[in-house]
Image 1 (spheres, rainbow, N blue to C red):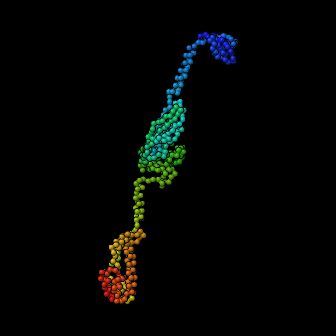
Image 2 (cartoon, rainbow, N blue to C red):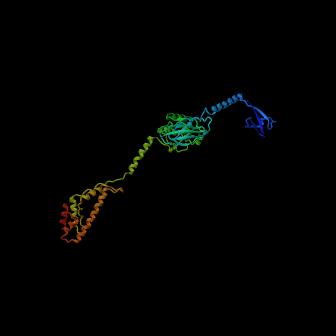
Image 3 (cartoon, one colour):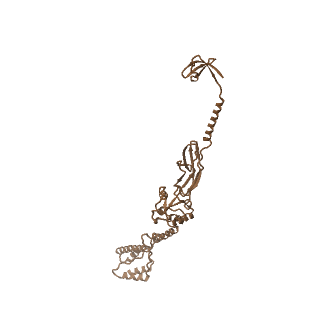
Length: 398
């Protein structure tokens, strides 16, 4: 297509061209011939370049294909979480390297029972969670955040072991005699535990007899309990995991636990003297035999016939039913300080005799001789005595 245009004005960068219908067209002056001036007529041929257009289309489609293959065919993959080892109080988790494709890494977080437990560095492929409860089920999952979005792993349910479950114990042997190491391997196999050659994140105990070596240093750096082989024997004997306090490499052997049978025997033997020591001591004194009535009468007669003798002791007052009940209650109880029952009876009888003697002396001083019998009967008690020895005593006094 050929178009004739009239040059109207030429500037440094732009030339103004006029069409036949008086339209203005701004055209780059660099594309015009160098000798063009105002009023010159130029012919411009306009045509479509099919070949160049097809080449450009091919390049554009190739670029789109490269972009799709590089950024559209691969995407980040969710983490694959699994359990490596579980014990009574700890769980070791591991996962495969994360696949980010062309996305950028933002963060990798571990969640326990729906709560965020913490962020994990990108170069780490395992982690250990300690301080868990015995025989308790926990739920774990990983969340990967990238520039292409967020990806979560499947939830993993893990239950911690009981004290009697020894399958989670993983032992790394250190420096020890070869025979002891073979015996240790047999014990570990019979327990159902595992033995590995190197110290890893799932190592629960490091067993050795000498504190030296690279493995010992690594176990010390990782805060792995370093115990003697007797700890493994103790777990096998007890049928449960035992504390490591008495089985450390530098611990006193006296602190180590003993078998259940020996412990129970010692407990039963020591409990017997303690019970005997705690019980109060009660002594029983046999009762004093009573004198016959004839001997008591003769004794009273001798006391009356003697001029300077003291008046005889009157018989005790008859006790009421309430006093008898109280005396029985008092006699049935014994004091903790060791006072016996018969000692209480003797003390009470002595007090009664002293009070009766005082009353008799006061009555003799204030009563005439002719009225001695009535006064004596009154001082002896409110109720007349039915004892035949008392009647004989009154007649002898007169």
